[in-house]
Every structure is written in structure tokens, then in C-alpha cells.
Amino acid sequence: MSTMLDFFFYNEISPKEKLGPTGRTIEAKLLKRINAVIAIMRDVEKTQTKPTVAMIQSLFETEEPTKKSLIVEKKYAEEKKEVRFREKQNTSNQL
Image (cartoon, rainbow, N blue to C red; front, side):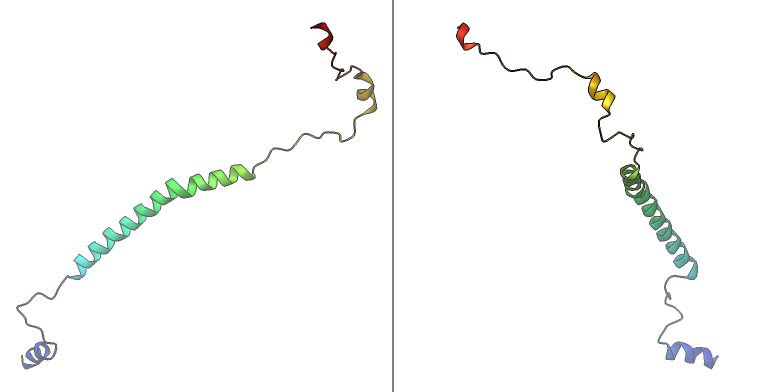
């Protein structure tokens, strides 16, 4: 009995006062905070990360360009013989 009284005396606690939260209450509070952090991370993933990744992937996805010949082929140049530009007629004489 004297050992128990010495424990309370040396640690400056009273057997009548509450020692604070128990292990169960601390665990419950931690689980709530962990669940809140998980919810925040899921929200960030849905609203920021996934759309950003999709936009970046769409920027890097390219279709293969169709191969165009750089030099005009001879037969194509011969087929197109129409005149593209004509000189403007002087219309000031008709006024």
C-alpha cells in the first residue's frame, strides 16, 4: 500500500482526478483523422490528378501523319495546267 501511495506522490497525481483520454478514445480519434485524410486524398485524385493526367496524355497522343511527298510529282504538275492568277483588267476607261 505504501508503494502505491509513493507512486501517486512522486508522479504528482491524485487517484481522484482523471488522467486524460484512454487508449480507446485516442484510437477512435486517430481513425477519424485517418479517414478524413483518405477522403481528402480521394477528392484531390478525382478533381485534380486524374483530369490533369488525361489532359497531358491527350497532348502526347498524336496520330501518325499521312506521308506526303515533298517534291511535286511530274505527272501531277503536267495535269494541272490551268492559270491560277490573271492580270486585273483596267476598268477606269469604262467610267
